[in-house]
Image (cartoon, rainbow, N blue to C red; front, side, top):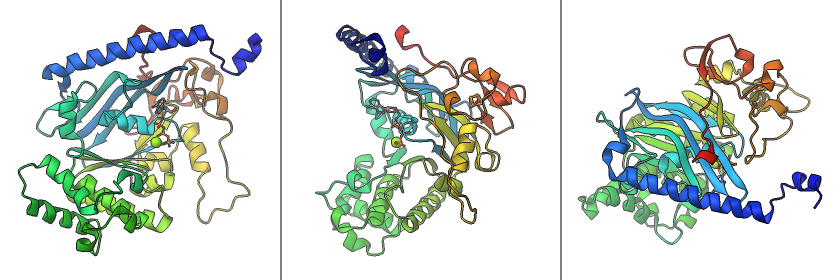
Length: 395
Ligand SMILES: Nc1ncnc2c1ncn2[C@@H]1O[C@H](COP(=O)(O)OP(=O)(O)OP(=O)(O)O)[C@@H](O)[C@H]1O
Ligand code: SF4
Ligand SMILES: [Mg+2]
């Protein structure tokens, strides 16, 4: 194949492919061993929160996938907090690393290919201690998942087991985390949860199978399962994407009410700005594995500052606003295996300036709550530094 052709088609020679395989095997083996070693000593996975009012602190988190074509930096130097009793919306287009961020927090990455190679994810246990999830052993994670942190997925039918009745599936979670409870108490708790999530015929639904319910009801059941143990944090990954608009609004209302009742926090992942606008207290905007802007919902919706966020706002239909054609952001995301060393949004950016040809922009605090990663704000706020990436070759 001619040199030019090879470049264009991202051709990988047999030799290169063998090198990547050897590298992946060596690195993932080492990372797995380091994690197993750290998991043996609680001192290595217990830590303290920077701010005890936070439930979770993502601190320079880097999660990479060691794939056959090279290292995919799915999440690269991500920093944000989830404060107690609040909803944090994580938005960005498909493939920007939203789900990988949440899976890193649950330690549900596809291992050994997927690895959190740098940073800390601190989870507040509420008793003055915290776990660094990155090093926490699986036995401890099992006591957190479904109990302290629970997750609601996009498609309720695939989250529920089609061959078990609804009641059994909700009972199972309570039983697992409360082995001392009697069967009658567990059933009573399940019925209480079904009522809480707005299921009118709770006794009937208890003995139904998932296929007998509508999409909205199934998602209510998933919420009941997620809330069965009154978690501190609920991760909702595109919870309403599979539902129609009216049911979507009901489910979001329900989530918000239950969160307030249980004093939980929500990490709400979505690509739909409308969903975030109605619900989130804070918003994190991700682009190609990095946070480009974060702030309160008011900062993001009324003062969007990063050109990507501005583009997202412009591409959102607004009732009452007449436009000839809905805006779309030109171009596409760079190749995840070979990310450039300049601003990842540069090639799509309509506001770029001379500095944009330099290295990736630093994070700049433009108000107490609002941080943006863009050269347009250089000198207009406190510089917080550059995202901390990990050089995979040095692992
Ligand atoms: N198991 C995997 N192996 C290799 N790469 C992966 C794997 N899982 C995710 N990725 C890559 O990580 C990046 C981030 O994926 P992620 O699923 O977090 O995107 P997302 O923001 O949740 O997108 P969506 O809105 O489509 O759900 C993508 O480039 C994806 O290709
Ligand atoms: S740093 Fe430059 S290229 Fe990147 S988003 Fe800001 S203006 Fe655009
Ligand atoms: Mg996703």
